[in-house]
Image (cartoon, one colour):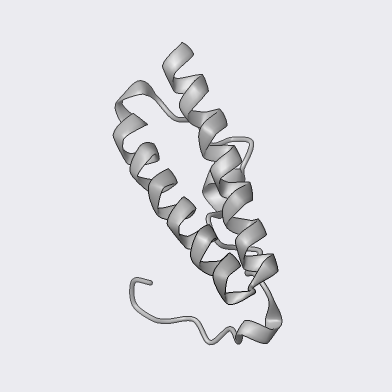
Length: 80
C-alpha cells in the first residue's frame, strides 16, 4: 500500500475493499489494458492457490471472484 499498511488480522477474513475498483460496475477496461489484466489474473490465480493450500477459504474465494471478474473484463476488452 502506498503511504501505509493494513492492520487487518487473518481472523477477520477476506477484506471487502481489496480490488474494489475491478468489481465496480463503473470500471471499464480497454484493449490497451489487456497485458495488465492478464498479469493481474496470473497473480490472483497464484494467490488463490496459495490461500487454498493454507486453508484460508474466504481469501481463496476472494481471489477466485477476482479471477472471474478479470476474465469478464478481458473478454469485454477483447470483443470491443
